[in-house]
Amino acid sequence: SDFSWVKNRTTARHNTLYDTIRDTFLYSNLTNSEDVNSSYFTMDADGFTLNGFSNEMNNNGDNYASWNWKANGAGVSNTNGTITSTVSANTDAGFSIVSYTGNATYGATVGHGLSLAPELVITKNRDVSQNWAVYNAFNGGHYYMYLDDTRAASDYHGMWNDAEPTNTVFELGSHATSNGSGNSMIAYCFHSVDGYSKVGSYTGNGSTDGTFVYTGFRPAYVMVKPTSRTGRWRIKDAARDVDNVMDKRLAAEDSAAESTGSTEYIDFLSNGFKARTSEGQWNGNGETNIYIAFAEHPFK
Image 1: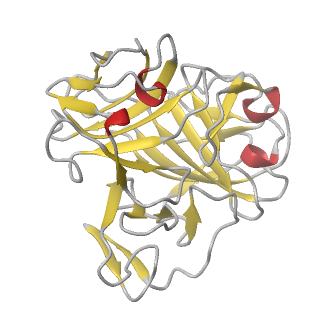
Image 2: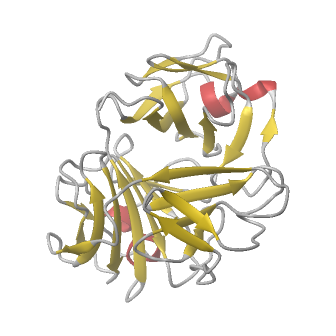
């Protein structure tokens, strides 16, 4: 894989993110700069190797989850934007890893290497302590959220310059979370691919017979975040929860160990997923949620 996200399920430990461009760790539940102590983890062509002890990734007897994406190796130079980037892109899968140096300039653009405009962009300042900035197409370039935070979507032009990504670049404001002056930045970009992945939004109905969300495939992985209210970046997957209803809980912004509970029941179905709860995290009445989902058995 080229991008791996690992979480200790047994013990409260950080969500640990690693990719082939950086060769270092970042933690989605922290604002910290990157951790260069990555010698105990090696990315392989078909997975990864753990080379020693780590509480986050290889503590004796602890159970872990890992979610992994294939890009295109160490990356190539991309000059489509006003800022030259290094991009590892899997255009078939609608996913790219983008490294660039910020300039704190409104209207700066960065090439993302995909064939379509990304619908989800997650950026992190690698050099200094800053939040993880998130763009999603359903709130648009006027708004941002933080991956390490539970707050609702907020209107602020300094993050994405009130602009939408194109099929070649995404645009930046001047804020250090997305465009720190002279800082090394990383971005993860996603767009939907029919039969493989879906970035979307839905509105909850506040019922235990919850909103059905059509993806066009049975999901293997879903991450959901309320945008119109405070809520977690909840992650469900078919490896940890093999049967419906699914109730095992992890969150991108939270170091907590895996937990279970009837307030967050959902089902993975043959063509989407469905909330089985009236709880606001997944299905608040009239509340908007964004999600990204990947197929268990892709059609492409």
